[in-house]
Amino acid sequence: KKDTVTKNKVKERRRVLTKSLRELHSEYKTEVGVAHSISYRQFLRLRPFYVTEPKASDRNTCACIDHENVKILIDKLHQIAILGSKNMTETLSQIVCNLKNKKCMFRQCAKCCYSDIESAIPQNTEQITWHQWQRERVCSEWKTYSHFVKKPVTGTWEDLLKSFNEKLDALAKHQVDEALPNDVPVVKGTLNIHQVTANTPGKIMFRDVSCFCHRMGLTCECESPSEVDFHAKPATPSTTLSESDDMVGKMVIVSYDKKLFVGQVLKVVVDDVEVSCMQQSGRKNCFAWPQNPDVIYYFQSDVKSLSQNQSHLLVEAPNCQLRTGISSYQSETVSK
Image (cartoon, rainbow, N blue to C red; front, side, top):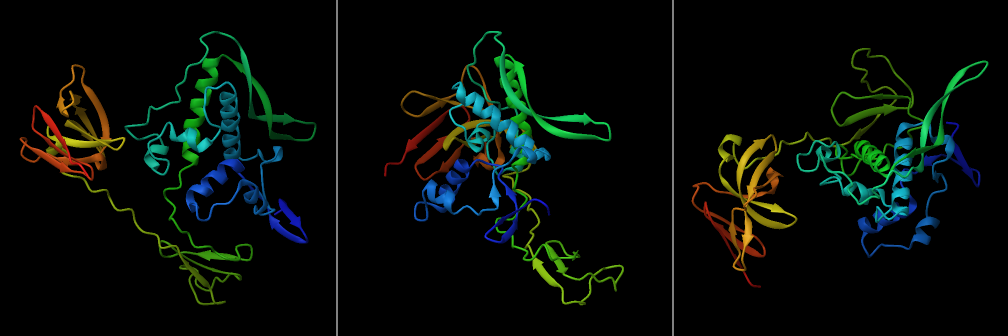
């Protein structure tokens, strides 16, 4: 309640940015499209006065510390040309398949769980310095308290890159918003709400004056309570092409980077499929088994077709038609 901002006699609770204004402006243009796009200068003018950048006194929250420490490391690596962008979202997208997928952001995805930022760094033992926010315990004559201090950290280039990958990995968990609905209704007058009750998933009842006439359910019509329905929907289990045991050993067509590849299923682990892929040979779109096996995990949603009789496989895509047998694979492009 003390952290408020007043302008023209209007007092509002202060809101702290966790991303840079440049990054927010870039995300805004992507979401609204060209028709409603505005310049960066106009974007700054329209920013509410109570939305501010973090100050040194805001370091008492771990989320703010995590974001700021990663931002400092991104700026340092960009300064020495190891990273090509200062955008935190773009940097996160380099280590995960999907920024909105909880499995990817919690580093549990079989395809990207071991992904790190890899770049050429000076191969010497030169000591360099960067800064990080750290918690420090202070003991005074009367009391002991903790606060955050920006301290220099010394190490090698390898230490810097290792620390950056560890902190970026931890930050990914903070970015997950998959569990929230796309459009969450706004609960008006939150500062005046005195009692909130919920008996049904996705629905809350709230009022300005508390009532305890029903000790068990806490649900009554006293003081005319208001209701908000968040339209919570249970997560539907993902549908699979077939039973796990039936997929092993069959020929499939999988999608990778918007391209189609043929391969054979080696193993199924929960929602992931381990596939040994074939390689294109010659100009006639013939595929053959490579000398060194090309084995990779795919999501089951990436499997576009599954061979049912072990002798023939056919899938039609918007721009190509693919046919394959057990030992060979041919593709015939459909001209448009």
